[in-house]
Length: 225
Image 1 (spheres, rainbow, N blue to C red):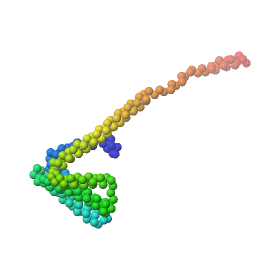
Image 2: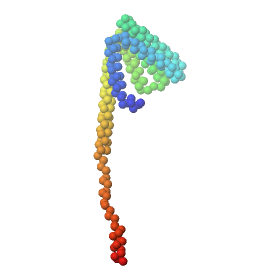
Image 3: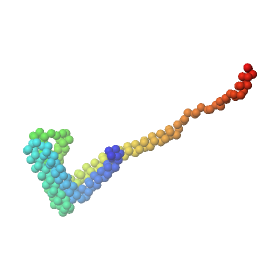
Image 4: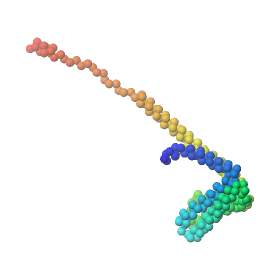
């Protein structure tokens, strides 16, 4: 199964690139869908983190902070989901920017508090990801008039870039797959040709064996005697 997936990885990459690009276009053309997807993302991101966080966090203060952060994230997700279902009748306006920017800013703030003050373990990827979340969240909150259309344009640009990278990766995997098939076919033809050209060693020719005539031998013996 693993080899099959690796062999046809290019199919999934091309399909994924098309889905990402379609998402970026739909997000710009239909802001309501953007709100729904963003709302579901916040809800899932909040709910599926709560149990692992509470079970692996011995610090009681951090547990309380995590619960508050997750609760606020889920609430924002529900608000965006409800407003997204209204479609063009959504009246979030500038509140959209404050909600999204607030979630990003809060996530980064909690992370840095946990790692620097409460000595929560972390790594480089988490650090830089939360630096980005803190920066973007701060910009959105400071700007004040961040709306769905602005985010949709940003997502469309990111979708185009991601689709290009994934498509290029799919192109390379498809090309490698074709060359691999060609190489196997050439090897198969060479083996068949080698079998046809096998020369067998000729068998030695049989020579006629002359057996002595018994009667003549007996007569010769009588004459001699």
